[in-house]
Length: 72
Picture 1: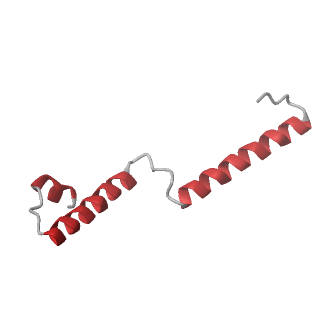
Picture 2: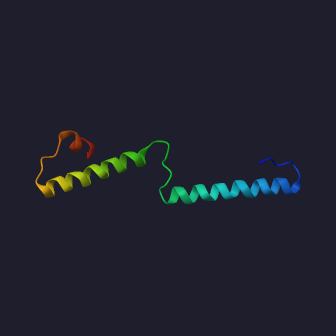
Picture 3: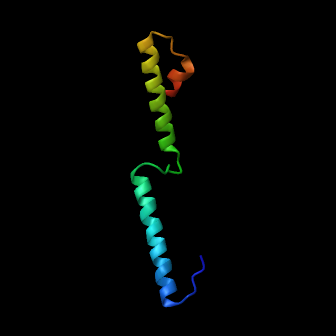
């Protein structure tokens, strides 16, 4: 989108930036975006591993060591 530096062009640009910022905030709040550190990803892997272990134990199956490692 091209915005010429007219007063209405500037206000359009500002509105667009504000809208994007609000969308980003909403996405971050709902946990859709992942922080650059990847913390969320690790947490979800850990949780998934825990759930998997729970399922295996319910079925009385042996739990592989590498899965236990993930759940730490």
